[in-house]
Image (cartoon, rainbow, N blue to C red; front, side, top):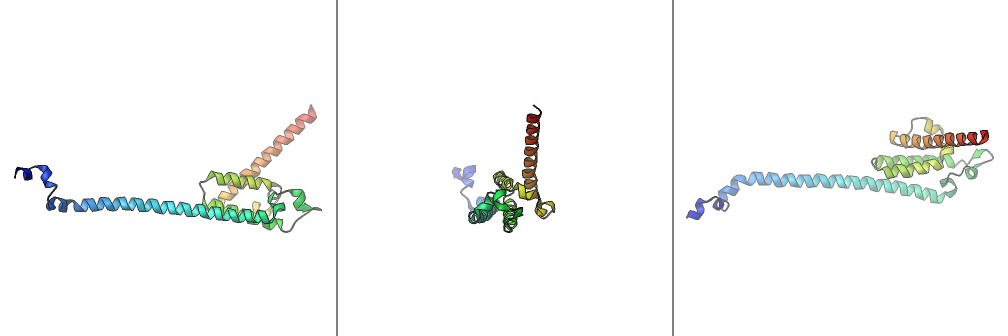
Length: 169
């Protein structure tokens, strides 16, 4: 019975495992909890991403249905000094969609870049929009809007400087 006197033999006894069962169960439960939390976070992230894609898909559908509005061409939208009455509604829907996208997926800079690109096409209208002047939109959208309009303002200032320099030369 020398075999039972060694430490290795203790691993074969019921008493050894019975005393340590609580520790093992707690460890397994902790690992299971960690996997569950990771799955929940992943599911939430994917759900938000799907919401953003769905909202943007609706915007693209709106653009497909209204190609004249989608490009934001002022000469097509504004005739005889009057803006097409449907265009402000198009812009409102566009801004609402962008707000939903940014709210759903705040950390994705690719969305911000895409939205900024779209906003720049409609800058001529957005600069005069009452909706932009009032704080009706979420801060995330307002930041992208201001950035898009700021870039536009800086570009116009550079163009004016270039024109002024050419005139003086």
